Image (cartoon, rainbow over all chains, first blue to last red; front, side, top):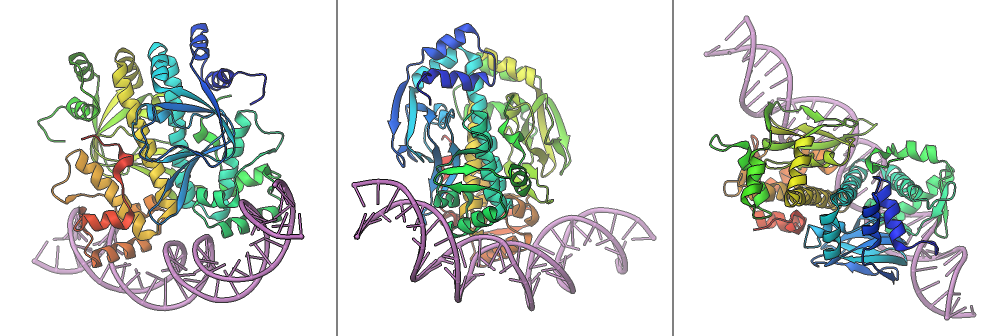
Length: 242
Length: 242
DNA sequence: CGTCAGTTTGACCTAGTTCAAGGCCAGTGG
DNA sequence: CCACTGGCCTTGAACTAGGTCAAACTGACG
């Protein structure tokens, strides 16, 4: 988030990738009572079993949605990048069925459910836009099922990197083929269902074939086309409009 | 679907698990222009890349949502049981990012998008109810990510069986611990990301420990509690209300 | 300069895959 | 009424992708 934009600008920009807003709709969004707060990395915003009364817009940083298993494993089921609304679903699903936490230091804009309901009630097209966001979440989850269910290690990691790179690009947070990338190898392991050791070997292979460079939290897709090919990445499921 | 109920009754029953309908809302649903059609098994209703102009209610039979990979594999990402609305998301996501097909002989009620939009436009609470259905779809997909990403073969199969049993029970389609179960071992393999051979061995193990009986398309959860324990199944993510 | 989080590497192991061959049984046609 | 077919299930044997365990390395930071 750069200093010269208000939180509502980020929200508006995201909504306007989907539809032309009327003057009234813009005003209504700008009037949303937002509480902007910073969170340190590895903080839970909502936990399994919670009944949140607010939802959040991710303004800066990365978040993850994850589940904890009885055997102690942690499975990450989604990552959120700036501009995302990682928990709008709480508007209609009272109880959290997973955890939502920060992956890096984050800035969030919190909105009470009541304010969202009122906004949607008065502006049905905005409601549809939020609905659409949750549908894309679902589409991403389906693709993750494919990833963990059907691709080998190289394909899984490559696909995940292609996805997050494409999503970051869509919100203007890449520079050329590079972007900031806060996922550690252990986190990559939890997102792909592989072991950290094997993630390391897979990344080494990718570096060896000059597919990527990755260090110090910075990722470069040196050979983007090869990455797309290695994972048969097809961005249709992200439903991006240009 | 028994003969004494109209298609709209099934839809109404599903909606009424979520909210009390007003007289007007009931009437509006009953007035929906439905086209009821039978389909043979293994028919695609919508394919990757399609832009459907209608969506469907599944009245009888089972459907699957699946993706085809470049290597020829098929990954099933969701199964739909009677009462489900497997493609409401097409209302807001124009292009299909996966395939939707029948797993068994099916009876569907087809509705034009325009009719759905008009219904939702006049009855926002019904819109919310449909939105909620799509959110539960997303929750199920997230759990499938956990399944394919974090559980071993026995856990995966047990979890899938617990899920579909619970969902069938919720719509009154089980008798005691038994239900009709049209998934072949190959289909189970495609839904869990395992090989058909290993599915077979896993089922043999389950039978050996008296967890289930399964033959001729009929499944009995002989030891339901053990199945739940084996897969750490927790129905929270299905967001069933009772 | 020590510590700590994250990464790298090696050696060994195993859950699940692959390939291949039969077996079972319901439906069909002679 | 019986033989044949085809879809599905079962089993064995050999193989491998990825897991596990354990140790060492790197670099940022106090």
